[in-house]
Image (tube, rainbow, N blue to C red; front, side, top):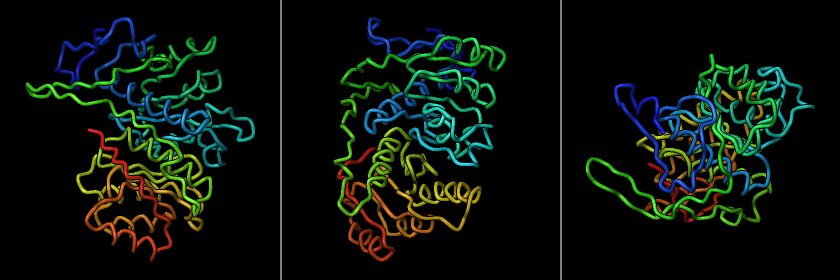
Length: 326
């Protein structure tokens, strides 16, 4: 497939070629994608597919620059979300609610996003997308009449991608970098509730931590995520210092809460893709209402991290699994 251009407009021509022409993960049914569009579609689709399978309900993600600005599963939308998008909280369908909850995490970053939903796009979601600024969507299907709505968006330039939910990627990944070919096994380690289950945790916190693991798995490292009630409140991506990542995401959490009631900042889950190296990450997370943390463990100061969790009343779960993505 000929792409509009590569990472930058001066990098052309650019193409996308399936490894096996008989097994294509998705197809662009409307619009002319760029290199980054393909990367966003691939990463976003993998996140929502994995989240929906792991948690048993529809999932959505809002991607920018190959990392999620927000991700969520279907659930209730509050008055702030409803007012923002002109929806009736009592009558909003599952797939629409998943996307609204995902986009609400960081509306500023979601401006011009690439959307992914785990279920077919229905008329309700298509009507919502008609009213938000976004560049494209990937989904496993589109209900009758939806394509006519989406194809008119952005003057006909809105990208519509149909994913094959049965596609199984190769077990080996290869990347060419500066004359070198790097090969590794695909990261297909199952992320399940068993990794974060703990008798000290309420069921909702277990699900939030599991969703967080899936989110950071598909986010540029270093990455952390704050979550509550099946949705991200803030995601920090691509920072060299983990505490900077924690602070960036924490500021987004504070913004989310200020749009509601800053007096109820509590019950938040926090997930890190790598071991917390110092207790300062716990101190920072606690400032944003965190009560549950999942991280791999194994840093040389893991005892300090645990002690700070105990001091601040945070339940710590050690997964033993690192989830770096570069």
